[in-house]
Image (cartoon, rainbow, N blue to C red; front, side):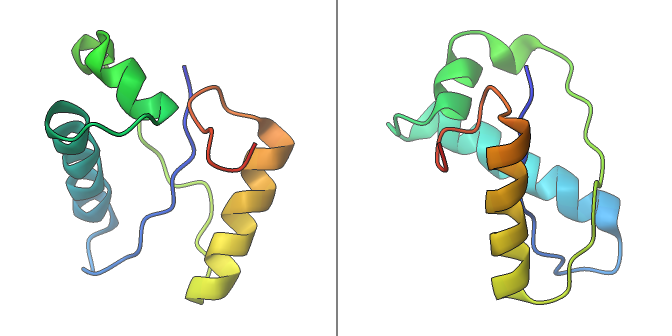
Length: 85
């Protein structure tokens, strides 16, 4: 399974920022009832899987980053991204 997610860098250490964002995804999947493909997958057993996180691109500017994420998701069609399909 794959997922593309945008993470805003709020600290100098990129790895810590990514891990914090992933922690929030896991917490929301467990505690909120959102019908997003990622959260449904996580609650159906995906929390038990090992996940690889990596930075694909660094984009400056919030508007530009969100536009780039939308285009990347449309192009690559990752299974767990359903927000831009």
